[in-house]
Length: 59
Image 1 (cartoon, one colour):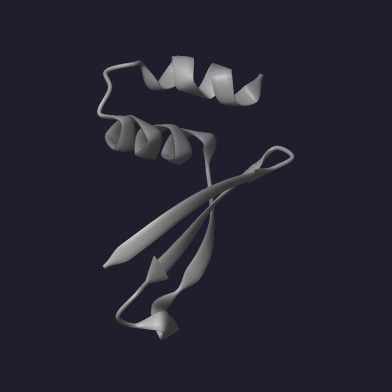
Image 2: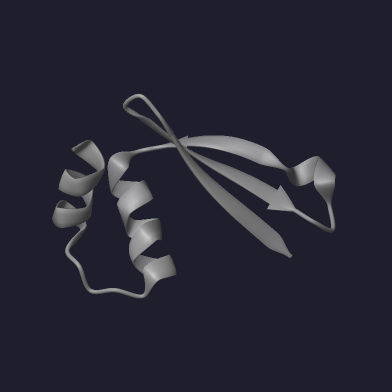
């Protein structure tokens, strides 16, 4: 099972990916605003345009 935590530090976005069955696969990934927003849309199951999410993140 995977767990994903999302962090924002300043203007940088990160995913922390945790594999509960294979801890050696755990990783931190720096991601673009676009990727971060797309992931939020999937998790929230929403049709909010990515551009609106990016604007909200940037605020």
